[in-house]
Length: 259
Image 1 (cartoon, rainbow, N blue to C red):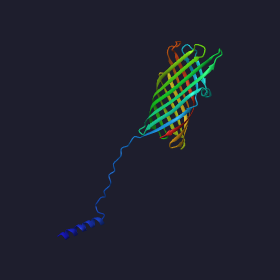
Image 2: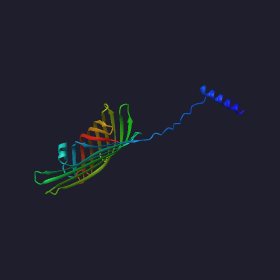
Image 3: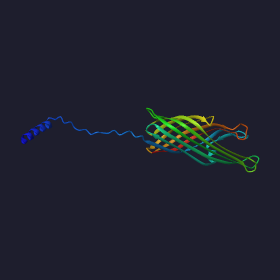
Image 4: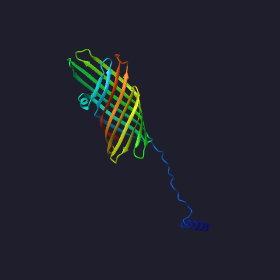
């Protein structure tokens, strides 16, 4: 009986194997991995070949006409620092930080004798949130946040009783957008515009430029930028009055590190 059962079982198994059988192959179970948000970063030290034009007024003093080209600024420059940073998530949201600082001083010999010492320190910080909209070619970054201004003026004279010190800082709410599109595999074109106000009556900036892709980790950034603010505090004609209606503009050269 046992031999008979074994023979029957062997015949059935052989039939299944040689006929292709109905034994379905076991497929491996693949578990889906949830998408992970990732960050990318850009850090760019840069130089603004700055010129300045506009007007400023302090207290009872006459309105000062400002018209300085890059050569004049460079001649009187004591220190400068300029850096840009971006962090972008794969979900489209990001952070934008930009800081520029200039410290200028000059000794001016007047027609009535003596020496007037003037010192100007100007700093500007931008802190924006970003959202990136991907286009068929390139993308648009929408920006919203603050622009903080920090301006200090010190004016003195070695013989006359002139001693003027002004420390003014204010914050503006700013919105804007930047459009970036590839020109070819190596070059990218971008255009930026912002506008705002709060501390200022009005502030605006604009830039246009290109980036050359040196490698996956480095770009050469070439732009032309203008930054303007129309600010006023105090009462006109009074000692504490201050106005600042100045545009800083010029070419930018930077190295953009990507990681």
